[in-house]
Every structure is written in C-alpha cells, then in structure tokens.
Image (tube, rainbow, N blue to C red):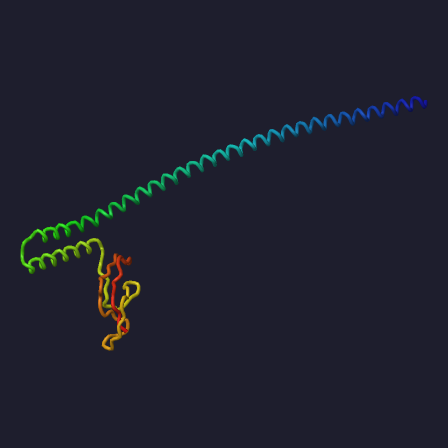
Length: 187
C-alpha cells in the first residue's frame, strides 16, 4: 500500500507539474499574443506618428517657401515704390531745370532775368506743394524739433525763444522734417 501511496503521490506530483507546465505554456502563449498585439499597436502608432511628422515637414517646407516668396515680392515692390516716388519727384523738378536753361539762353536786362528767376522759383514752390512739401514756419518761435539754432543773441526788443533771423529755410513733408531751418535765436 505504501507503494501505491508513493505511486499516487508521484502521479499527483506529475499531474500537478503537468498542470503547472500547461499553465506556463498557456501563460507564455497569452504573453506572446499580448506581445504581438502590443507590437502591432506600437507599429500602428509609429506609422501614424511618421505620417504626422511627414505632414509637418511638408507644411514647414510650404510655409518656408511662401515666406521666401513673400520676402522677394516685398523687396521687389519696395524697389518699385522707390522708383515710382523718384519719378514723381523728378517730373515736378524737371520743368524748373527747363526754365533755368531758358533763362540762361535769353539775352535781356537784369530786370528781365530777375523776373524770370522769380517765376522759376514760384514754379518750383508750386512743384513742392504738389509733392506735399511745405516750408517750416518760424512765426511760432524756436522749436528744436523744426529749427537748428546756429546763433544766439540778446535783444530786449524780442521775447524769449524768438527766431530773430533765418539763414536757411527748412522744409517738411507731413510730420517728417526734410531739412531743419538754420536760425538765429533771441534771448
């Protein structure tokens, strides 16, 4: 009987070992299936991310190309605007040069020459007005934003910061000073 008991125990041990072995095999198969599913899921996620990266690369290239085209187009437009502005100014100045050349070619008295120069200056001032250029006023007193003081005098007949004399007229276009007035300031 003891032999049977030992034999039974051996059979039971073998059965338990076989069950454990079967469970391990099943568990290994499940782990392998889980690993395959995980690998498949990771591959899908990797493919998705790779496609997103490619889309972003493509978008970056397009935006870079658009920016480069914009920069070139803007530079070209800026050159065109500058050329047009210069042409507009020259169209207004050239008639003044023509008038001065005609004045040189005329034989006449000093009074006739003086009258011609006055007419030319008037025409030139009209051209400046058309271009929006105006003379800087000195009537409101000295303004360091518009005038450049090159001399200073003391005179009891004049108020403080009064422009006593203009040496060189100043001009501005809108709020931008083209040339500051060179003036003598009192007190």
